[in-house]
Length: 352
Image (cartoon, rainbow, N blue to C red):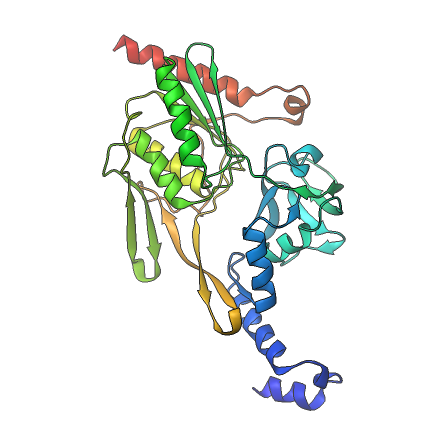
C-alpha cells in the first residue's frame, strides 16, 4: 500500500492508469511470483481472448509450447501444420517471438504473441541442440485443425496406431482402429505417441482400459498436503494380453506420458525412442469477479510406480534417436526398432 500511495502521489501519468488496471497488474505480479509457467491471471479482456482460443476461433502455427528449466520451447509441432512444414522440432528453444525476447515469458503470453489472423506471419528465433547459432523461422499462420489418429497395418500383422492428440474424438477413433486390428488378424500393436502433447485426462484413462484389467491404477492426482485422487481402468480390457510397444519422444507430454507410464508400470510394456517432455501438473480455472480468472497449478500426476511426471519425464527402455539426416532422407529408425521389438515379442509369446 505504500507503493500504491507513492504511485498516486509521484508517478507522472498516474491519472491515466485506472485503479482497476492497477489491481489487475498487482494480481498478475502475485501469480508471476509463484515462478510457475502454467499459473496465470486472466483479466476480463484476456479471459475473453482465452475463451475464443479454446473454442478454436484463431489462426496459429500448429505447435504445442511449454517451459522447461525456465526456457520456452516447442513441445511438439502438430502434423500437417505450418509449424511442421517450416521444420520446427520437439525441444526447439524459442528465444524470440517477432524480436520480443521470451526470457521469463509465461506460456500463455507466448501463445498470444504466436497466434494471429490467418495468412499473417510470425517470426520465431529458434536454437536447437547441436546448433552454434540461433536461426529465424518465418512462419505463415493458418487455421489449425488438430489431427487425432492414423491407423495402418504393417507387415507381419502389426497394427500401427499413431495418436496425435487426446482430444474428444480420440476414444471413438481408437475404438475403430482396435476393431480393425482385431478383426483384421493383427498379432501385435505399435502405439505411436511421438509429438503427442496430450489432452484430456479421462481420454488417457479410458484408453488405458483397453490394455489393463478393470480396477488397475492408471494415475494418481496428488494435491496440497498429499491429498490423493486415484484414476483406475474401467474399460473392456480387450487388448490386455495383446503384445504392444510404445513410441515416445520429447514431444510426448501430459496425457501421453500418463498412458505410456501406466502401461509400462502395470504391464512392463517397452517404451522406445527418446525421453518424454515431463509435463505432469494439473491446472484449474478459478472464477473471480468481473469475468476474470485465476489459472492455478493445483496438483501433479503420480504414476503407479510412484514417479512424479514433471520430474524429468519418461526415460525409454530402448533409446533411439532421430538425426537431421534421418529426417532429410525420410528414415525412421525409431519405428524400425519398434517393428523389430514387437515382432520378437510376438515370436516369444507363441513359443511359450
